[in-house]
Length: 125
Image (tube, rainbow, N blue to C red):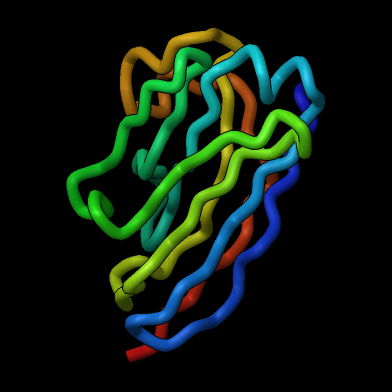
């Protein structure tokens, strides 16, 4: 089991911002692809953003230009900066890793072997 701990969720109004943080052991943060996924209604998670060890960035079309994923090796975290939030961004957000350096298949739950417990984001109109 890989300990992934998300934080930073909350409730904001449309147009607001939140920053989510995923904390993990140093060897996980610095040596594996880390991704953010979310689950709104229904059982399926959808990929939001991923960052590979080589710095490759992958975003879902619906968040490009609004969300930014970044890695801070000194803090052992991967952050998701979310700007201009909309009600459709409301979901439980999870970070996950497949314990591999690359993120292929991109933004797919099949690339993830370990998940955090999630943090709730609620955007009101």
